[in-house]
Length: 158
Image 1 (cartoon, rainbow, N blue to C red):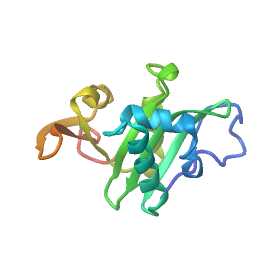
Image 2 (image 1 turned 180 degrees about the vertical axis):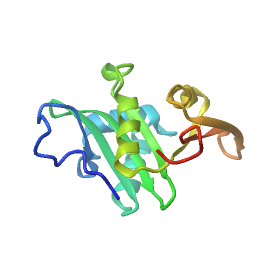
Image 3 (image 1 turned 90 degrees about the horizontal axis):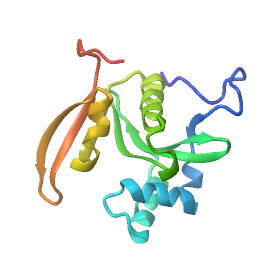
């Protein structure tokens, strides 16, 4: 079911690619990108986030790589009926250049399933701009949060 986007011999090797970078999650520049989106962006919080991905076979950690540099990261989990985005973030100097949108599109193409994310007020606009429907709810620990779901208008999966 997964469509491989990075092992095609016809792809320009200098072109941006969305690929598994879990083995690189402890690199400092990736930690900085994680800190922009993690609920606890402190060095300790980023280390805990990285350890969670490293210790789980269920959690995927992909990066948007341009010219051998990771400029965006996406942590997600694939379920039978959806892809759940846990973390998505872009390097400061690459923000507002379409990297986040490209990662969302890549997930849609790879899995062909609806995408779902839970986010905070500061990030809900990113999801709304990309066509996600959003529903606010009160989280007992973090206050107002949003569930964001991306499906086609007719309710079918992409």
